[in-house]
Amino acid sequence: MKRPETLVRRREDEQYMFDPKHLTSQQLPNEDARQFNLFHVANRHDPSILKRKFEHSSVSDVVSDDNECKGSNVEHSHFEYLSLDDLFPNLNFGEQFFTNGKFRQDIRNAMRRDIFFTTSAYVNLNPKVVSMMLDDDSSLQGSWNCIPKNVPKDKMESIPPRMTRLTKVLKDTLGSEAPTGDEFVMTLGKLCGVSPSNHWIDIIGIKDRKISHSWHQDTGVSFDKNDNAESSRYTVMLGFPFEDRYTGCGVFSHVIKLEYQHLAPEGHNVNEPILFEGTLDESFIVRPIFSLGREILRYRDVDVLHSAPDVTYRQSVMRFM
Image (cartoon, rainbow, N blue to C red; front, top):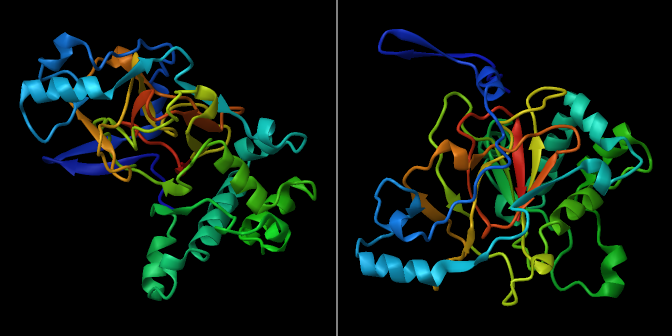
């Protein structure tokens, strides 16, 4: 695994020093950021202000689509932090995860391999391809669900465990009372709420330079017709920092709090992200903090826009949907 602490790049005969640890240490989380109104009339006609990316340019069409996508006022918290100790109490899980880099790396490796080798799409791949996909610095995706479809309830106990490597890692470090790998993954997955897609991805991101934010929603769908926050669909992120005892930005995605929910337009393909273009003042941008007790970030896709960090400093972040 390449350490991104200080990378040297050649730019027009000058040496450019990229130090993500230093850069993230200078960033503020801004968790009390103002809410942004995507539907404010003045913003629709200002080409520089952030707005949904359209394939057409008709102002009347844009206004019509905007009205279609406008949801309720967001009155609840736009995002929340969760801790491993809350989910798995009396195991000292959070402290071990926070201070033990080998433990974190073993969890990552085990999860990636357990999911990879139980995903039918990855069967019979060329060994070189397998090696590339399982490389620490390659993103990997699959499903977090450990229960096969259409299994009768009376047959549930006979289902063979899926996350066997992860079980060993957790038991070896946390003891015999630790959750099994399946229990760990399913507990995180169930935080996604109602009708989850079961999609999982271990995201690496760009680590060798600062990037511009690329604001989007993954689906623009988060709830049933009653808009009930208690029966909603959530995005869940488990952060893997680059160093022990790390507290700071650069692990989780950055977010913009929306004043009004932005809903996917009618007919939008749920498997395609909703893209936004333009810029926004820094006062609107939240850079969530990873720390002990804040290993997990959760939000509804309709309540925020999100982007990869402008400066990434992490091993990876795992996203459950």
